[in-house]
Image 1 (spheres, helix red, strand yellow):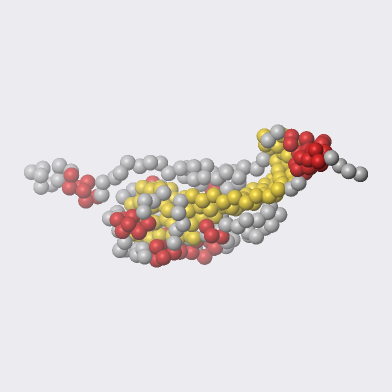
Image 2 (cartoon, rainbow over the protein chains, first blue to last red; image 1 turned 90 degrees about the vertical axis):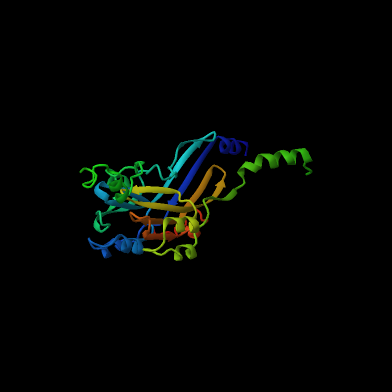
Length: 151
Length: 134
């Protein structure tokens, strides 16, 4: 009994399962044709996890989910091998799968791809902080070299 | 045979680590999103000011050229665990309420998507498989 107690205090095995969100149902994207509006896609698939700005007013959105299952072994409270259950908006783990949709500048669907989100969305990266852009009208009005003023 | 109380206490103390234990825990981030609030949003009419009044400050703002997108979310994580002698089994289930709102150049709501799944987070042990996960 003493041996088992000591063993239990020093060595522990850990079995952990972590689920992050539900996957988009297989085939859901088959109903979305290129040219579909962003509004239609959001209505079909719900709210995405990520939105990324793309060049020329285009946009990409991504749906993400993950599940990890595994054994770990801990010695004196220190886990020496374990599954990584962490997830946050700044870190896409290797296990995170997803569906990425690319829209053009009119927010119409160009293409979509399912897979490991880190691979599929690798070129997109994290959204960069943009400096606020003045509205087109304000920018035009602030320009000193308008045709009327240049005369 | 009569066992002395001190010996009985010592045996119980040694046996304690052999007994199983279990736990439940729940973590939440932000406040829940409600379907009624998203129903009050009208694409083509609702302005950013009206959205702010209805939903409060967003958790993230993404600038999309002259346009923008706002994210609201509420996350629930439910964890259940069972510990037996030298084995511990833990299950964690994270689900979210999530809303993304897309605004046009004038700051008027163009469209939005809502997913309200936070209340679908469950306590279960690792061998249960109630989720259909790819």
